[in-house]
Image 1 (cartoon, rainbow, N blue to C red):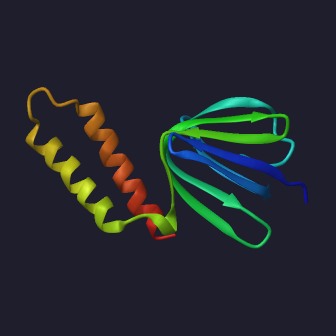
Image 2: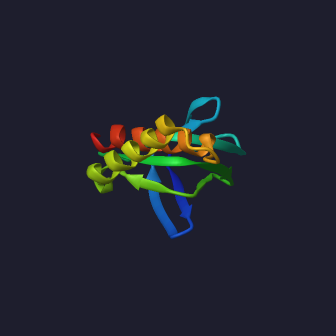
Length: 132
């Protein structure tokens, strides 16, 4: 089976995955899959789950959005944050969700409701993926 190389770039560093069979990403218009020899392009990512399939294993990652770049048979994810399901601290994610929901409920003047909604979505996403 054809494989491709995946590079994940965050402000904290770069992670490389070799021999990826398949990857599913959360696009702004819905999820999309990537296999070897995928059409080149740049795709906007939404908050959601990235699934990476290797020969005998799968990895699930929570992302807060970013971009996927596919060039010369290589895939690069450019994201502000990404977290493996096994690395997600459920207590921290629950507290983040509670804080964001409290801010939304209190509707404090001057608070950016778009950021509050985004924080809620990210926390829910992290909690969902932590169970993978």
